[in-house]
Amino acid sequence: MPYIKAELRAKYRDIIKQIKQIDNKGDLEYCVSLLQNIFMETREFRYSTLHDCVYAVQHCADEFRRRYLDKREDEARESNGDIE
Image (cartoon, rainbow, N blue to C red; front, side, top):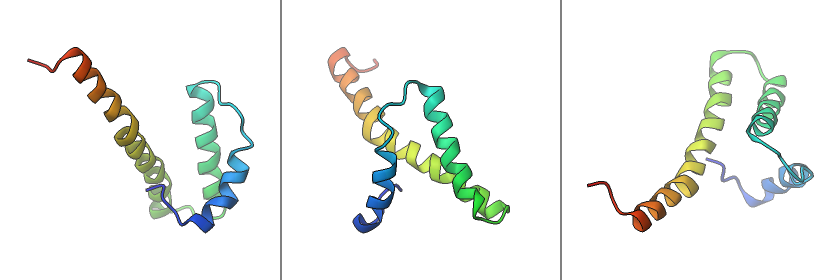
């Protein structure tokens, strides 16, 4: 999950916040890929590390889906009615 201790967040937040705009999905994917590459640069190329890298992104996607997409779907169901 993307919830790390508050004292660890600052070193990443300050760098990431320098990115003022990500224009499209391709740009977002590029940025995520760069972060994965940075992660792998200092680690041994083995299955468990590759797995960690992939699943970190997947866990963030799952959390984003839980917090935002699911909420949006619930709103659409409430305003448009449930499946009959």
